[in-house]
Amino acid sequence: MSGRSPRRGGSIGRLERPALAGVLTREVINFSSFWRATTFSSTVEPTIYLLAFGFGFGSLVSEVSGYDYVEFVGTGTVATAVLFSSVFPAMFGTFIKYQFQRTYDAILAAPVDTEELVTAEALWIATRAGTFGCTPLLVAMVFGLDPRAGMLLVPLIGFLAGFGWACFGILVAAVLKSIDNFNYVTSTVITPLFLVAGTFFPISNLPEWARVLAQFNPLHHCVELVRHAAFGFEPGTDVLRVLALLGFGLVMWRLAIWRMTKKLVD
Amino acid sequence: MTDLAIDLRGVVKRYGELTAVAGLDLEVPEGTCVGLLGPNGAGKSTTMKMLTAQAIADEGEITVLGHVLPGDSKAARAQCGVVPQLDNLDTTLTVEQNLRVFAHLYRIERSRRRAAIERALGLANLADRRDTRADKLSGGMRRRLLIARALVHQPRLVLLDEPTVGLDPQVRQELWALIDALRSEGVSILMSTHYIEEAERLADTVTIMAEGRAVASGPPSALVAEHVGRDAVEVYGPPARLAEVEREAQDGGFRTRRTGTSVAVLGVEGSNGAHSPPDADGHAGHLALVRRSLADGHRRETNLEDVFVLLTGEEAT
Ligand SMILES: Nc1ncnc2c1ncn2[C@@H]1O[C@H](COP(=O)(O)OP(=O)(O)OP(=O)(O)O)[C@@H](O)[C@H]1O
Ligand SMILES: [Mg+2]
Image 1: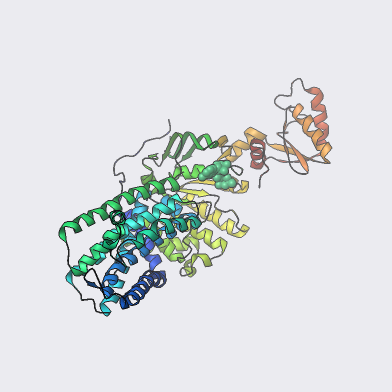
Image 2: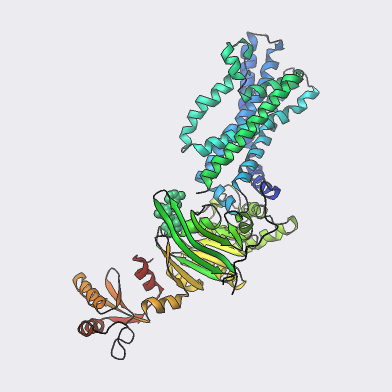
């Protein structure tokens, strides 16, 4: 007889900390070399939106929904910064890492599962999104937005929304066969969601159907939560908005893991 | 009996219509080096991927270091080092950073990490290149780093998928020395290759794969003795002459191997008088013809390459 004696006990479980930490270490080391470029692209673009709209439109409309327009846009573009710094790095980064660099093949040969890999990547992107998301708020403060204690929750709101968008981006990268197809997702999903989130103009002026649809737009909930963090929470609806973002994150997380497993394990 | 580091029973892996691995049996006893030899597309890389559960078998049983796959694969992977056929280093990271990432991924305790990285740098002979980005390394250095990365946690089992492909002879020799050193430390090794010489030198046993199956398995010398005997005669000539020799030899019960410019008649020891080939009875006429051909040829020892070509029908590299 050959010595086949399956060893049991001390067996390794799911979503283990060392595995998550290992993947995060890779990202942190990578970030330490590239933080300038990443930070630049993730913060400058929303700031340009903020300045362009804030001062462009701001010269036409001084107040929107009872807010000073610069403050309205300043809080709204936090969500833009969160979106841009989560969904795009997730889409492109994931695709490049499995397709061109085969980084994920290397990682999955170590004691790391696809579930841990996806989770760690999404946590990392969400952390960055929560941080970068604060930039427009800081810029708006320079232009007169008053600091408030509630604003300390903005990174958390950004993290929560960013986690969902990161998982969405990973899902897109896992499903699409070519990086050129990313444009379809950007034009048909991300841009519309970005425009009807209440960032630059209030949802309340839109037709009924658009207002209903906006309730299914996670970005809208992110915009509203940030605004309420800056100007005062509405506990009843805000709890629902947090739940909506949690639900979005949870669903996207599981979908991303499912599709990445299909992609990475033959 | 010794424990098995790897045990595959009747493993099948299909990709749609294509069956990449078609009922493979393979054993790697602990502390030995097994060479997986086979032509392109034989299923070597697919087999390697199944050992880390990066491909899931459709049928059969796979046990790695006592862990039943795919369920317990993670525990097995923690004690495995993997050198893939295709380079997948983090090109934007330095040599040292690449090793550091894997020191974390392989869960080396904080207090031992530094030493483990230094040790791996030493193995790869890249200590003076620690701050070079991986994409600035030469091909040979990248390969050494790839191997060092797989060894950073001192695994019990190492899976090497064509570790020396595309390397110059000198670097290849260095890697052979490294692999040999691992084996003498008691590490179990499964190494795929299509370099016969590599398998002959390093492997305790060789499994020859063709079309997803093991067509022969055993120590190189035993495979040679079993399939192609001890001596071969190489006959050179124009194609028509080679075809004739081939036919005569086969009619005489000999196995032959064709190369571009010659035919090798295998297992000819004893056929110049003293002994007859194993199944020569009743082939006396043919035998006379074969003898004449053999007299023109050049006698040499058989080797693993003869076995490989005979069993896979492919010309070896
Ligand atoms: N992901 C995949 N999808 C479809 N077919 C695959 C996949 N991976 C491998 N194959 C097919 O399976 C067969 C075996 O491939 P494999 O890579 O295991 O061969 P190999 O022995 O490693 O060859 P080589 O010496 O060229 O590396 C080939 O026909 C290959 O085309
Ligand atoms: Mg291969």
